[in-house]
Length: 425
Image 1 (cartoon, rainbow, N blue to C red):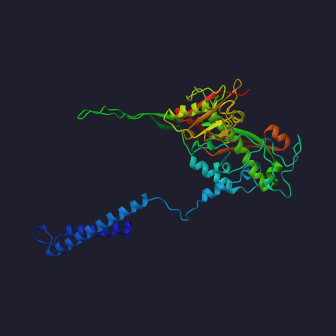
Image 2 (image 1 turned 60 degrees about the vertical axis):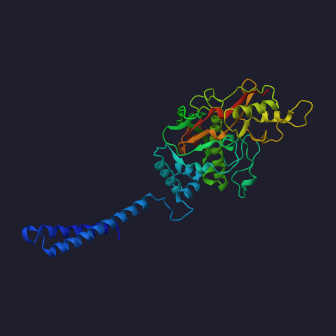
Image 3 (image 1 turned 90 degrees about the vertical axis):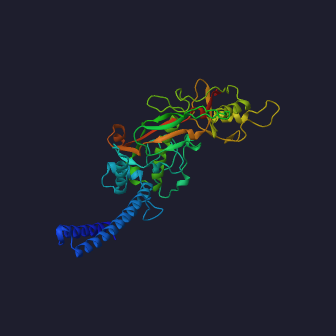
């Protein structure tokens, strides 16, 4: 029986009891024997109804607290819609309302509703930019041959995506090495950090243990904005093959990822997050590799381990990796090189990136526990289309701006060490 029915039954019982009590037929204003018997029977029914109501309320509360189960396990209509989002169609529909981009508009509206944030343009789900893909040169994409050199039409009648030759960009090394990614953030985020733990100590029998307390501070992440401005030809957006969708996604993803990776590794500029090599981050930079040796590599690892952390990998410029692969561990007597393989150093993963800067003929080699590098995302990508921007308009093209809100923080600076004097000349 439903809770509503049980409550109605209880109300009817109480009504009958009230009717009996309001019209006693016995001596002295008391109930008659028959009325008393009927009243006691109703009282028993009332107690039974109360127990049934209590059980039903308990079960309904348990149902409300239970984890939701999808009607179609393993699927989520919104997740499917996000993965099917067409970036090209969303852009094209902004300047040509006749284009059917209903799904893209619905996804954009739902993203804005869930994030409780007003977008200037179209909200594009991050899933669009998280598909494995190569990276291409940033230029105004057109459907004709480039004017500055040989090329091929990107809207052919027979085109295979695997034949398109990508122009390589810097890879996002921070996530390859295991940086912690935080998604769907809202407002400023304070992340608790254990600054000092309680201390243990040996004591004599019957002696008091010295009290000690944990000490906490916090790492704060605040929304910061990175953007890309490019242009696409109207003809390319309206007539391109399906492969163009992939190329547009790759270009946006590569440009935004490259800039975010740069901020995570270096940062510290105006309006930028403080990355690992920024002066305010506070990672250890005492190890010198001005004349790189095997001992310097071990010292870099030891610096992190002596801070009670466990490093997980290296990041360096390609020229640093090349030099380490040319340098023997022990001069004149050793056939082994400091870096024996392109992707490992001292049995740790070693990733190369031109995002690590050269300053005064020196670059940096970074070692650390990369999960202590936090990358936070506040929003979907905000894509705003402007077909009237003067330069694009004069060519019949469309200017497109993409904005991403993100931040970078280092949870434990002692988990990283960098040699910032590695020779780059």
